[in-house]
Amino acid sequence: MKILVTGGLGFIGSHTVVELQNEGFEVVIIDNLSNSSEEVLVGIEAITGKKPIFEKLDLREKPKVQEFFKKYQDIEGVIHFAASKAVGESVEKPLLYYENNLGVLVYILQELSKKNKASFIFSSSCTVYGQADKMPITEDAPVKPAESPYGNTKQVGEEIIRDTCKVNQQLSAIALRYFNPIGSHPSVEIGELPIGVPQNLVPFITQTGVGLREQLSVFGDDYPTEDGTCVRDYIHVVDVAKAHVVALQRLLNKKNETNYEVFNLGTGKGSSVLEVIQSFERVSGKKLNYKIVDKRPGDVIEAYADTRKANKALGWKAESALDDSMRSAWNWEQKIRS
Ligand code: WQD
Image (cartoon, rainbow, N blue to C red):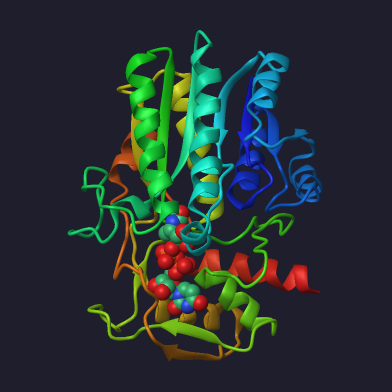
């Protein structure tokens, strides 16, 4: 069975392609290489023994999208990762984000609406909850006004899919709300490749550990949490990837309860910034150079998932603990800098 993975050369996309191929799916990747490299195909092949079909294409070109779906009429499902993801950049360039993250989504859904049957998985984010009132966060927690155009594209993206599914019963979709994916494939053949200075905590830590950065700035230590630093739910990227496969199988086997569903993807465990640093120090045996600085505007105090809905409906559970995820992130960082 043929599955399209947009953004399949990116961080979460590439790990998902591996899991799909391991499960016997035939994968077609679309990627415009704006934040990834064709080299990732080599890593995917090294792990799975199979090279996925790759089409270099910019999904903003609607006629190209239409041509693609004419060429690959046998595509039965789409996992849609292709999107821009830098919160700060989205504030500077809102229209770029609305075009990349929403315009493209509309084009793909238009094509899928022409089919007799289609399955669609969307990369959403825990950012839709903002600062939730209760921890852990359940899927029925209210969606809060977005802090950035990026966050808004995830909220509106979900609404676009929900509304489309309402009038297209032949289309089934699942939105997966990721918490904080980290780590790399245990083979160390693929992993995260941030461009420039990483904005996310774990790549910044591993780059500091390897000597590429001088010092980690910890954004604030007087939050109302146990040690004063922010709390997040860090989940191994391979666990995230596996969840996509079971979500897709749920749609293909028609086990879904309605034709639009939402699931949290997290471990259910919150970790503070200082706990993440301690994890790094444990698995690497190195002391991390860090200092406490001012809070970063827009950061929520804490966010960790109630994972029961995904555990029950998808029969899926995150398997890796923080140290496992951190170890794989560290192994990857050492490999790419050696
Ligand atoms: C984690 C913690 C920082 C960097 C991510 C995505 C965002 C959104 C939600 C994605 C926070 C602290 C970080 C550093 C630090 N959605 N930190 N020093 O904030 O949860 O946001 O998930 O789809 O796009 O980026 O993750 O990794 O940026 O930060 O102290 O140099 O680490 O304050 O508490 P976050 P993060």
